[in-house]
Image 1 (tube, rainbow, N blue to C red):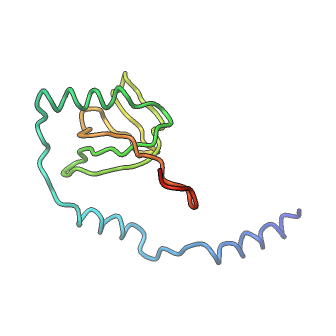
Image 2: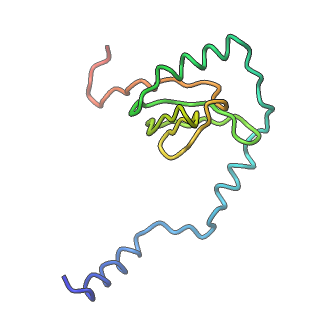
Length: 119
């Protein structure tokens, strides 16, 4: 395929790409919506629970993690892409979460496929 034809195709495809006139606006709104909260001080039972939850997690697991970020607790869901015991970090998709910031972590059960009968 010639470079001229490829260029026209790319220009045509660009017409259909989503347009974000306010780059960064939605991230700013999300930060403003967040309710500020003090970091919870985990007791011995909480630390044992979190440690047990982290020990069960494996790369490739689908999880939901509640963790402390800057000034509030946030939840991220996704596939565990990495566990680094040396850095004490968990990676969920592209989010790197220090072990010390995790409040809870658990598996997300698979959803029922369309047309599949209920158990």
